[in-house]
Image (cartoon, rainbow, N blue to C red; front, side, top):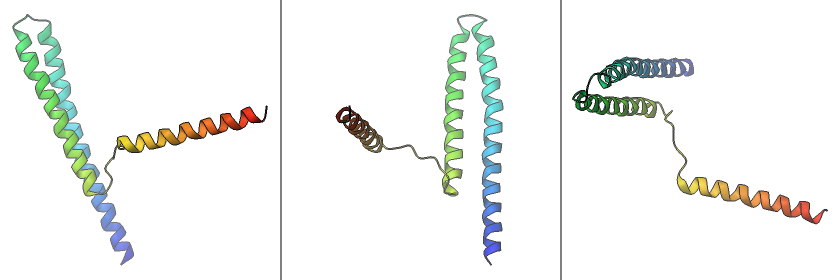
Length: 111
């Protein structure tokens, strides 16, 4: 029974990773093609700047779409990245600062 659960979880993770890989592979190819096209258009004339702007918007939208897809897949597996909250960062930095000053104070009294 336990082995069946592990095998099922491994299959689920493998499928999730496969979906992420496929999504990123397809998006990378599209982004690269759009970037090459935008670069060539910039060399043409000023009128192509409107088309370049459209391509850059498409690149941005595709990047956000892939980010969302990968994040949703990761969340479904309990493996999504979580940024530290600003108050967590502040608390961690405050503790480090306090520890540093305590260490410095101890060193100063031992001199």
